[in-house]
Image (tube, rainbow, N blue to C red; front, side, top):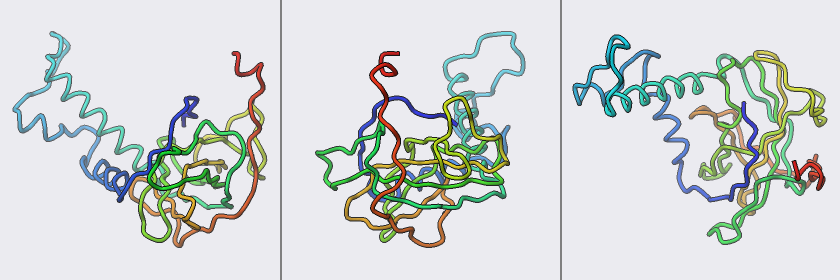
Length: 216
């Protein structure tokens, strides 16, 4: 689980591009040690020992195989666990996200408070995707993610969520269309919400960093 610290701009994604890509990633490999199709079609065997350096093509095959294995692990990271949405609201506090003012669809920041339980160590909170509750248009993943205590308060900086499969609570901030009153959440093609979740007017907000902390 990685918390992003860089500034990014919101780019609306039309269609279920991210969702389709996630499904494709999850379906491409049936096992962790399967050689990807690219290596089969090009007849490039991976070396069986470390007696020589990999060629550029063999390196590509090895990287592709590693990425597919990692994608499969993440896609299955929720395991038999589940996600419960505790609330969602129009967000006005600090975030390193900001909607693109030139985007074709006017957006605002939306905060989602959720609890994850029963997951595995491969679960990636960044891969939770927000989708329009009416037309199922995807607006991407990689939210501004901040851990919360299980009672919904900000977690002290010197603490970290319990390791899976123990329950974790998170505040996820997304850029989301202003005119969309509700949303769904997906994880690698799996719906986490059984019906659209409505967005309230206000809720918890993260404090803005002090000038001293920004200088570090």
